Amino acid sequence: VIELRRLVVDDLDALAALERASQPQPWTDEALLVELVHEDAVVTGAFVGGALAAYVALRRLVDECWVLNIATHPQARRKGLAARLLDAAAARGKAWLSSSLWLEVREGNAGARALYERCGLAVVGRRPDYYPPLVDGAPREAAILMTKSL
Ligand SMILES: CC(C)(COP(=O)(O)OP(=O)(O)OC[C@H]1O[C@@H](n2cnc3c(N)ncnc32)[C@H](O)[C@@H]1OP(=O)(O)O)[C@@H](O)C(=O)NCCC(=O)NCCS
Image 1 (cartoon, rainbow, N blue to C red):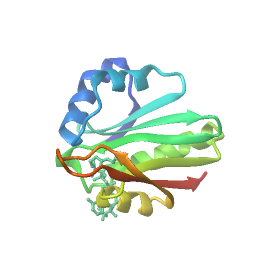
Image 2 (tube, rainbow, N blue to C red):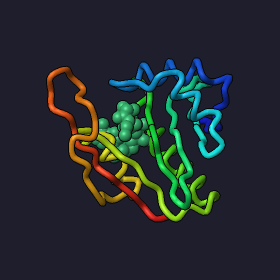
Image 3 (spheres, rainbow, N blue to C red):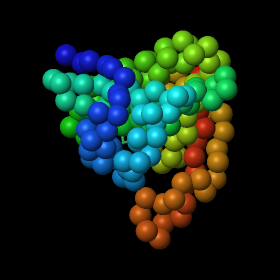
Image 4 (cartoon, rainbow, N blue to C red):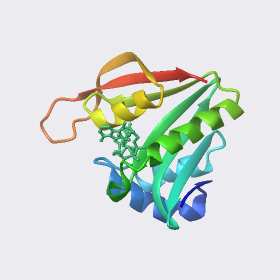
């Protein structure tokens, strides 16, 4: 069974462990805590067998809704968790009366881009040299800007 619920400060340790296991350049605990307590942010977790397996961090920005981060534990991928969380993010954005959902993704992150396209987001822009390289000495990487109407 998959359970989705909003994460709170008590979930910080589990969230930080998930982030470190899932991301090549994980957010710090401090950055995660900011999202857990920010009045215009909601962090939603997906639990499998009671364990936190994926999460999405969402921000309301005037009439837009931004996915700031999304990750699924490597052992829980391709089971639809991130897609479920993006659906929940879109529902939250509608509840906020946001007009659109937005995100940025590394140009080379083919898996995430496939997920977003499957969830109805379209590419609307490209920001060159946006992200630091994933490996030392490599060039910076472009961000692809994607959106969908809510
Ligand atoms: C990207 C990420 C969040 C996807 O999480 P997930 O829970 O495995 O995704 P889902 O199972 O919901 O995938 C739904 C659909 O998206 C597409 N998709 C997801 N991951 C994919 C991949 N690696 N390659 C190709 N398509 C992929 C597929 O169409 C998939 O459906 P299918 O499994 O039936 O083919 C996960 O790989 C991850 O945590 N990556 C590291 C962190 C990251 O890059 N986050 C995004 C930052 S912008």
